[in-house]
Amino acid sequence: MFNSLRLRLLGGFLLVAIVTVGVVAILASQVTVGQFRGYLQRQFEQGRSRYEFVLGRYYSDQGSWEGVQSLVDRMGEISGDQIVLLDSDGAVIADSARRLLGRQAEPGWVGGPIPVFKLVPPPGFDSSADDALPVKPPPPVIRGARPGAPKVPGELVGTIFVNPLAAQTIDSSFLDAVNRWLLVSTAAAGALALLLTLVVSRRILGPIESLTAAARRMEGGDLSSRVAVKGKDEIGALGHAFNTMAESLARNERLRRNMVSDVAHELRTPLTNIRGYVEGLRDGVLQPGRETLDIVFEEAQLLGRLIDDLQELALAEAGQLRLERQPASLNDIVELAVAAIRPQSASKGLHMEIDLMTGLPAANVDAERIGQVLRNLLNNAAAYTPPGGTVAVSTRQAEGSLEVSVEDAGAGIAPEDLPYVFERFYRSDRSRSRATGGAGLGLTIARRLVEAHGGEIRVHSQLGRGTTFTFTLPADEQVT
Image 1 (cartoon, rainbow, N blue to C red):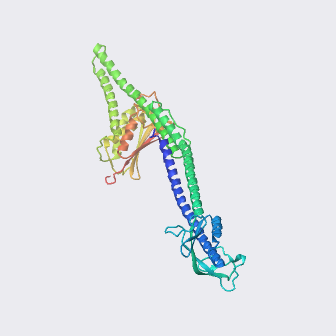
Image 2: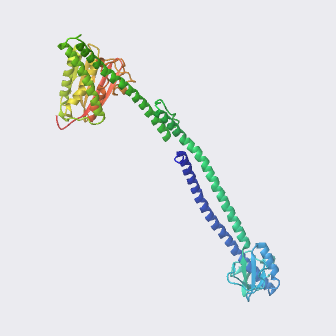
């Protein structure tokens, strides 16, 4: 179950989403905490300046700290902070929380100390004006609301300690809310990632599951299984490749079955003839004369050639076919092959046309194997050309290669059969036998031999006008 690609995709996408959102949430939390605490600190500093100024002005106006507790109470109610005022001897004379009255200052008290100076107004300054109290008096010079009306500090008359209780509460509440919403956002992002992963994995894995099901049907022997290709992406390319592979497997399976049938048929015919003649000789029906022995010998040779063809094809396809390469004249090889086929062509009344290019460079080939290729092509041409027809053979030089063509005047090959003419045991005419065209190994062996020499073979055909087989071989420019 844990090896499922769907689960791995789900886990991978979910992990990436959680890590990404988590990192963003942590960074956002750090930045928010820093910015918010900086803001609170600036607000606290402004509040300290206001406390210092208001209390300094109170002392300047009253001449003492008498009755200052009520002012400290109002300041604490407005700000939400705990404000503690000490006189010049360090004794608590006012506390907005009323818990430290009469005590001496202790080391470690938070929020201070803030010195309070008696404010001395300059000559001509009216301290009773409504707008004389500034909102944010910057030390050491404190300016009033009206330009040109400063107040300067005088003697030290007290000390303030401020414990920002409200700020701490706001700080804690705000940060708890931020962290809570970041956690909720992370969970929501994870859920959304889970949902999107399910949708995406379904779209990705759906075609793969179809491929798996089709592959399992093929494993069970159903070679007709195909998948529907709905896109041109990598999954669509995979589906197209699977369908191509399935078609190739089905075709190869058909060829394999045909091959078994063809081999059985081709082996059965000479074996049946040999057995019939041997049984006739054993029963005394036939006399062991030369004619009878020649027929048996011919059938045995036919059987041997078929077995040799199969063995040679197996070696060629396995890449174990040995070639005795040496520089040879391609024109000479063509002439020998044509000479070998002349008796067969003469018996059908065929005309042989030979067009050999003079001055061809030598080819570094196995002359016997290339002659075999030519004989296979010429035998096919002679078999399919009607009596009185023409078989043409030509040689020419192309760029860096030598080219040989064999053309017949037969009925031609249908376009749908052309891609398969070099397949082993492939026969477009299922009624054909070895006597009328062989078992379908000659062209396959010819292609393997040409490819083993580094060349290629191709076919061109038109129905009713004949077929041309052409193969090329690398030229040996050093020998002519």
